[in-house]
Amino acid sequence: MSLLEVEGLSVWMQAGRTRIPIVEDVSYAVDPAEIFGIAGESGSGKTLSVLALIQLLPRGMIATGRARLDGRDLLTLPRRAMRHVRGKEVAMVFQDPLTSLHPMLPIGRQMIEHVRIHENISRRAARTRAVELLTEVQIPDPQSALQSFPHQLSGGMRQRVAIASALATRPRLLIADEPTTALDVTVQAGILQLLDRLRRKHELAVMLITHDLGVLSAIADAVHVMYAGRIVESGRAGDLLLSPRHPYTRALLDALPHADDEQRRELRAIPGQPPQPFARPPGCAFHPRCPYERPECRTDRPELLAVDGRRRLACHVDPFRSLS
Image (tube, rainbow, N blue to C red):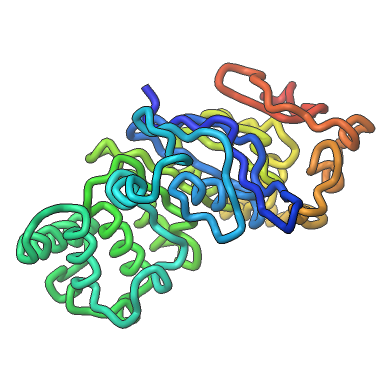
């Protein structure tokens, strides 16, 4: 049984009397203990689609559709009820922990206050809980770390602190927005291993947002690829990453560097730029950048349809069908 069920989620930006679609008709389900990947270039709507789930959209944006967690629609929960869900049942790790952690407060104070807001325990018990959490995410000398300010820790350590803080109230769903951005490869691997270990230990579902399909290939169970606010391909990670069907998914994979490539081929950049929300082309939004476009791609928007088992695809051409 799915932990989170999202149906027809759309995010709109209100500009006077005009609504500009940012995210359009997104549907998916996240299972307990699953690592659920959402991939795409910057501006594809990845982050906004999950901020809508916890009612943290920027001013001027509204969300429609349904997002059920234990039968409760997160999109329509009153603010007071959402405050109990946000941080308690659904936690989020933001892209840059240096900005999400308060720069003027020591780590210990921030974690202790977070625990006490959601759990009725003493300050001493909250401090003990904070030490346990820092130990669990493998922070060396957690007692000393509690006294440190965010700028005194490395990027990898700050990200581990952010993860520890998010896990403080034992949530069932963790949203990780680009958690490995700006970290070197070795530190990235450590963060991914940590997330994988924590989800197995605590039956924790993780929504992992990234532009790097290489990151998802390491730990994701399911992958949804977004472009111009819509899901264009989705499926089990092994199937989708080994045999992508959508030209955009294939282009993202071709753009990745391969350390074991003896021929040292040049990286294949995707031509053009993703369209702005107010200037999305008719038909398939990817057609101006797609080498396989046909006339119908310019006029008819493809629906996201099941094509093979749990694989879904939104493409008129399906040029890689024979390779899957």
